[in-house]
Image 1 (cartoon, helix red, strand yellow):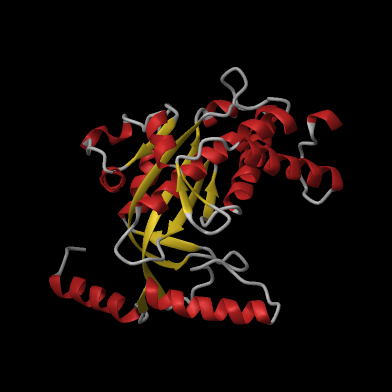
Image 2 (cartoon, rainbow, N blue to C red; image 1 turned 90 degrees about the vertical axis):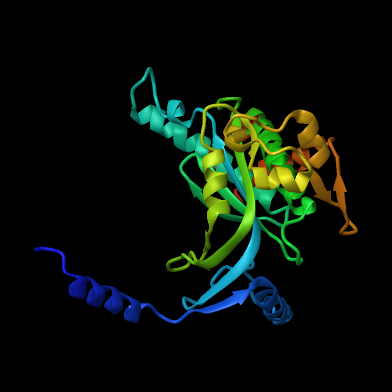
Amino acid sequence: MPWKHSVARDRIQKLLDEVPEMDVQRFDQYWSRYQIDKALQTAMKQPTKPPLFSLPRDKAVVVDTVQIYISIVGYDEMRLDDGRETEASHARALKGLHLYYGAADRVIEETNAQRVDFHSGRMHAVFLETGGGGVSRETIGQAIALAEDFKRVVKLANDRLANGEFGTEFRVGIDVGTCVAINNGTGSEQEPMFLGSAANHAAKLAEGDTPGVYVSDRVRAVLGYQEVGLLEKYLELNSSQISANSAYTSDDGSVLFGVTNRQAFSDRIVDTWSADVRKGVVNDRMPPVEAV
């Protein structure tokens, strides 16, 4: 059937008429209401949810974010035996993912980040900027620190819980920017989706076979580094830059930069993990090596 302007116009108008009205809020408006609701739920001993989870279907929240993706380097090879997919190779890959997912959730629980989802060999997390004036160096620093803590915990857990069976190299992509958060969940999984260039670009930076921490020019600008344009995917942060910009929240709530000795943190996470496995608290398929 030939294209007709009137038919196309009517179809477009019909689709526009079917779009539901949305209540769009800035994050500061949403945040004040969220804190009140969380305090009431806590007082009533009801479970609470992270910010932006379980948003009503007709609500969207505009929020400044730090988007972080962590991808397993060599994940495709993990699923192969001598270049072929086999039942054993898939079982090994699932076991490896179980280790990585467990490490990610345990580290994220210790931070202000929210884990958005896992997709195959990649994890997506987000830091929400609760202050005004755009994303701060402190929030970016916490994202960098999360990536470094995750890598340390995975390495230690791989040694202690999986007998060193899996590789521990990762590629990290980080970008910052304003996103629109909407509910993307179904059933009991009411997680948010972040619409915007920051989430998309961070995911692209995490694609590749070379490990390291790769950040966008927007991140570099906040950190005070020279922008590199199309070389973003090829120039990772060096160890000195990572160390100087890793930020951790102290017991009194202040943010500290440049803390490098995190062995005690990794030991605590993996020791608790091992104890939970022994007690049957978690359904891990990888008993501690010393218990095998």
